[in-house]
Image (tube, rainbow, N blue to C red; front, side, top):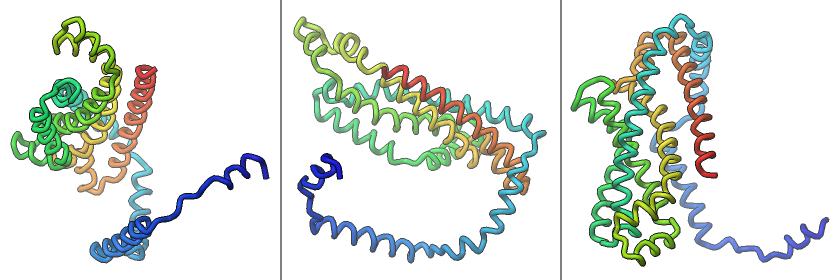
Length: 266
């Protein structure tokens, strides 16, 4: 045994308190009750595994001729993600400045605006899609509206937290020479937060490409609608083609966005 290992054995061990046991028992009981309430059955899952295998085999033989039909819808999906990311991130940028407590010192204003933000963040993207489909009808406009609100909820949370962790030194220097809040934001806050903002916007774009595929399934435009149609008509080879195209595009977007964020954060 090495000297390091002997030193590790000498370190005081934290006791497993009663609260830890209580939480462990609570989680186990919750798991058991959840299984009973949802009638979860692993045996039933494996009983239908053969049907899954047949569908998987059909999807593994994609209809390459269907690529010409799938790609235009995929381009529409990417356009939806780009538009919603730009609009949602721009709104989140302005809103996050209004709820950051090191920018706005009125607790009533920040409290009310944060409450509104939390309400928006609690609405799932599928529910947003359903609401906007009912309002504006089936098509990409509903998807763009839903993803814009969804992007706002994702980015504003990350962004205002980043603003509140910036170095206060530049802001104090601006105020010391008589600068106002606008001077503070332009010359002290913006240089510190722009890399984070671009990074979070790219992250939101990655999520929106995936989310727009799902939203299309409920009629909010994009390739998801074609995915639903091929599944409804049992055209699993065409479904496999759609999944393959989406998979490749998402991999490319993830790779480019990750490299871009790494370059920005250096």
